[in-house]
Image (cartoon, rainbow over all chains, first blue to last red; front, side, top):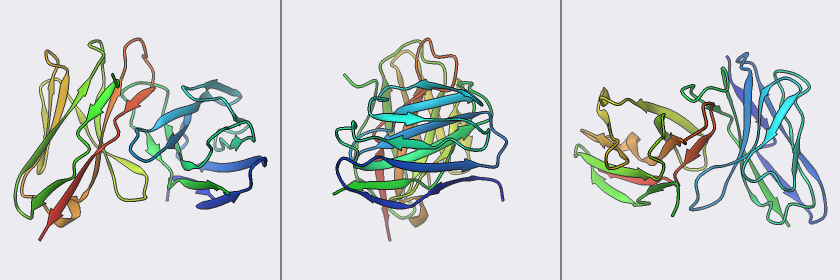
Length: 114
Length: 112
């Protein structure tokens, strides 16, 4: 089955630690995205990637980093510089970086900072 | 003012009834509009795109009103399985690519 996988589903981190969230897709999509969702708020874009070895900051990139070394993979690192990292993190992909393309989402990772 | 605004609800709807709700957007040059559905603690999934002429998909009807800058979603003959949060999603001006703005969602609860 084609789709997007994210791991782990739940993640607990101590303050001051970096943590990496995995995102893999087998849909052969060029574009990939990372969002965070907080209660009562819409999804906010952290980073996006149009193609392998290319990525751009979204609206709230501070304290996060990404890489896109393979088409299928777009891992997100939440660094200790992120002030409020506790959130629901969603990875998405689309065929290309075009406005009318559907974005497919992974099941998400819930990160809690203890 | 938020770029995409929705009534958070919840809209409590008896099974079989009709429910409708709107979403307003701030940028008059927005080009693409969508409704996504998100179940509790799950990922969003595309429900339908919204076209200028309005469109229907089974029991769901979406409308776009450019003059007043809102889109609407109507659900007829509500089913228990329609209980979810409905996210309004808009592509903003100047973004010819897939950068989307998400509303915070409208919660719908269908009761027996």
